[in-house]
Image (cartoon, rainbow, N blue to C red):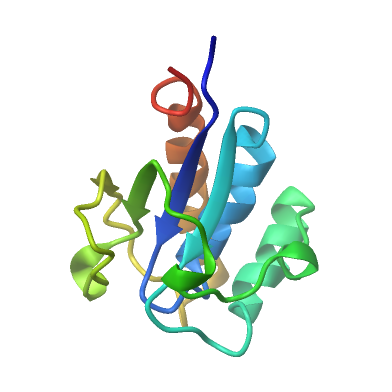
Length: 134
C-alpha cells in the first residue's frame, strides 16, 4: 500500500519562493502528497509579483488558498526542502532533506521570476517520481 507523504517548502519569510513551490506542489503533487510552505517569519502578503506572474503563467491564484505562515502553523512534514540557504536558512528543528539553492527574485525583473518559477516547477515535477510515494 502506498503512503501519502507530506512535504514542506521552507524559506525565511514564506512570501515568494516557498509560496511558489507550495502552489506548484499543489498543482502537480496533491494527489500523492500533502503540500505546505512556511517560514520563521511572515510577511503581510505574498509577493505581489509572484502572485501576478503565477496567475499569468500557470493560472494559479496563490492568494485564494495561500498566505504567509510560520513553521508552527503547519504540521510536521516527512520532507522539508529549503528554497535557498544563500539568504540564511531558518532552523526547523532538524536538517533539511534538500536545499534547492534558488535565488530570491524579489525586487528583480519578471524574467528573473519566470526563471525561478521554471526551476521550481522542474524540481517539483522531479519530486513526483522520487520521494512523494513509497
